[in-house]
Image (cartoon, rainbow, N blue to C red; front, side, top):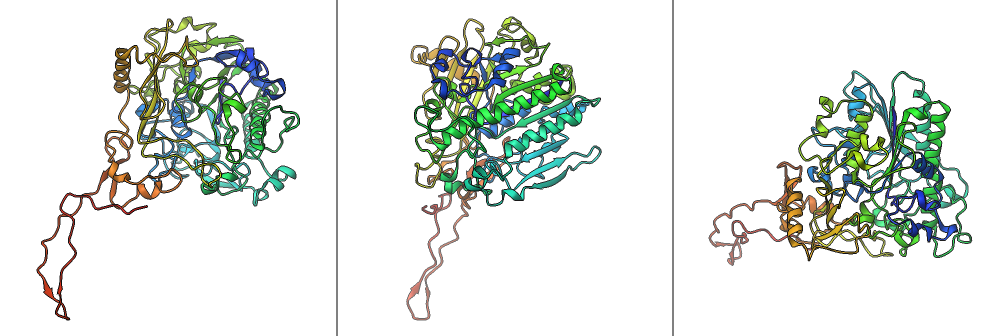
Length: 597
């Protein structure tokens, strides 16, 4: 089949199909039914996809933040086996990390199998345009959008990147697509006059053009469409971390939403988020299905819809914004983006393939987004033992093909041998909480110290029960839940079952590698002072007292050796006759005091 993978940005399971709770992905549809009618986000195309396809009620991301989540989805390797464990694992201290050597994206085997491949939108899996993570070096024939997270966040960009792969040539052709009308973007220019090019609408145009150009071709096509809709954005072309109060949701139109028509507390940011879901994401999928039907290839196309993590709490102009309260974005679950409870890691996964996926079906089997590469390859007819899939099948990668489950009326085709575990992880390399609202910094709750948070799912007793062991923050004590019977994580079973906790901790240790920058090989002397995520982090990472070396993972922090002291010189006579001594050196092996910040 043709395959379209649509990845939304920061969209929780409760934010879609609110107008039709019976077709939503809420653990309890009554939560959405209680939302006032005028406040419900209407996503009729996603409702149609649920009616015509399959909803996965226990689907999870690989990490509750963008960078590692996208790396895992693309490569089919769970985060515990990646070097990239969080937003901030790049050598510069940013979030832009190349796909690792020996890994590949789900486009690579399909390209070798004869597919025409394209990616549009937010890539976020390369250090820069010329490095190994460039999408046109990773199996895609064409890409247009933002290569890096550093570029992302511009709703009306003055330029975007483009690459095209030329068969037979090692290096892709890179270019810049400029939008001069977006120079000096502002609310007055873009929202009031409509004279700017909106990034997410640009992506829609490019995807439909690609479908139109390849619908009648001999080769099937693959589209990876990573929208920024749902994420915070800027009017300004330059991303200004130190001026986060400029961030908002500059939608071209709020449609039916206004302070007069939406009951309860609203703001420009809340209205923008509601409109982004209804008038961008749902409209994207509507336009896609219409194009497929226009060309008569709807029945021959698999569409996969998901989000990279749970909803954010980053509407910076609105310090009161709460996605759980304002949007019912987690459908009542606790946890948001960066957190490991259900609201932060469940993804609204829906698949539609008319005539192949039974209409209106539901699965409760735990599915991980890093299952997608093997699932896509199987749907494309690539044999499970084909050598092109070897990078997806390395030890403890964790992914499995869900093709049989996708095509089944129910969960009878899976059992406790289909997969033994599911794993979600996020790591931090130092303290880093954002600034308070109104301070000019970014009010983002990060963590209180280095280490890793995680959610580990034990499927050994499926379908009777699925146990979830979770540490929301690195310093937290583990919590234990029976997630099928307790989807809202209300009954912590850890204290009553210490042996089970120990067993699952050991099981998790067996399927992951330690994160050197965040865990046992982290040297706290390299970060003696607090390194704020948006402040001193980059300076701390490059401090002359610390060095970063490779040992299985790219970055390992250790204190630089202090040179041995020279013998203390004898007193000499200065020209004035008073004695003079050279400065005393620190004893050998003792660290030199770091400068005070």
